[in-house]
Length: 295
Image 1 (cartoon, helix red, strand yellow):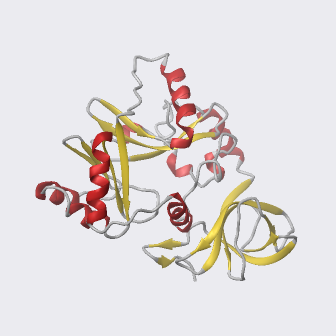
Image 2: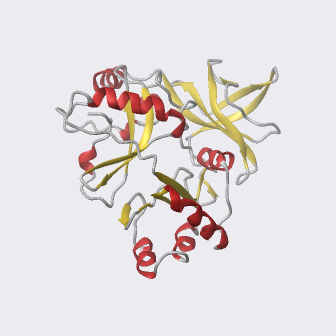
């Protein structure tokens, strides 16, 4: 009921579920990960929306026999990249390492008081480890000594943009339908009698069609794409707006995501400091496994 995706898909504790949490108007309150753990569910939220999310969930839970507990006693460390699993295997027990090597992507397992999920928000392979907060510093330095370099949110944001992943507050918010943010796949429409908050609103949008779409933007000329810059369609002069933008170290070009009218084609212009520069409009995914996804 709380999530647009269906937690019944989590038939086993070894699975992870990505979902949006909607308001009654069908806007996105947050995107999150859900897991089965013990006799309940574990939800991993965005830290920036933590207080609002908890307030919303507790308000909705008041009508049900359910307990919502914030786990401030836990910490999470994300290890991302093609060598993530291999690096973690060097610092854990041999049996744990073997199990991690067999863990499929988008799956999870609990070993002792550590919750391992083969997930992340970089578009690359990786592990997210949830563990008692008092043990996090020890794990951090073990990873450091194993050759894992720390990376901040700026690096994570560049990677998620190269992968075409949404960022809350940019590509989606309380006033944006998931259908306009390329998130229709996170909604479980079946069974038809399954109710969830926002279902009526997103069903109406689904029937009438969306007015805008989320596209990728590629600029090969000098300059950097930034959020809120205007994008003009070359054929029609209708405009949209960049929701995210940055330089891609992998591609050597500036890339971005933009909300555009559905009639937008594959060519456009971006306005930077009062001047227009040509850009390509393409599928909102640029890089996978270090390689470009377009010609």
